[in-house]
Length: 133
Image (cartoon, rainbow, N blue to C red):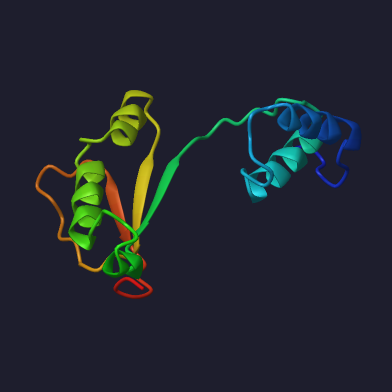
């Protein structure tokens, strides 16, 4: 039978918060991740909670500010980068493959529709909300 997660060890969760507060992280820099880590620590009763499954999730989209000269990268750069990730040619994909960690990319708003690559080693999911912003 699994562990009862209805009770969270507040002391352990607070110890994790104190630990995170001593790291070089901007206020709110971890977003909701800090809250999730605290809950996980409290559930497991360990300041450094353990996880048995890892995955790298990449969500790709283009933004319209490149047209305003704010960004130096164009929509074609986004598509090229995602192709590199899918084909295992970027740091994140090389590290994921080396450590046998699943990597999945989602196209949630690229300005282009990517076609499957012959050398593609990672999965591309399509969940496009729009063609950029």
